Length: 83
View 1 (tube, rainbow, N blue to C red):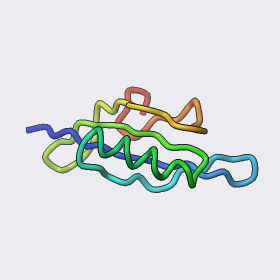
View 2 (cartoon, rainbow, N blue to C red):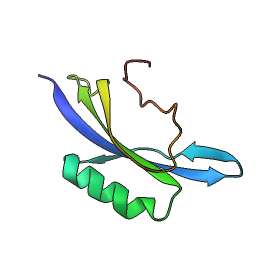
View 3 (cartoon, one colour):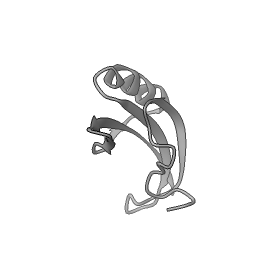
View 4 (spheres, rainbow, N blue to C red):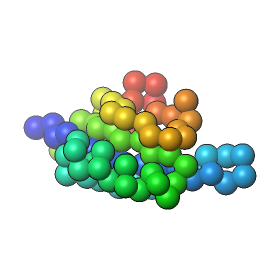
């Protein structure tokens, strides 16, 4: 049975580039948004996204929930429609 998973990914500025950090999983939407708001103060930006995970934990049908601060306009998490 598919399972919804929630992630927070921070972005740091290195020179002119925005570099994505490893995503951190959260228990639900509110926890992910709270974590992003808290941690985005130390980073250039953050994105919260959800995905549908199969039995192996592989994500598909990824949806961005919120962008905070500087996040590349072209950023799409793994499993999104343009992946």
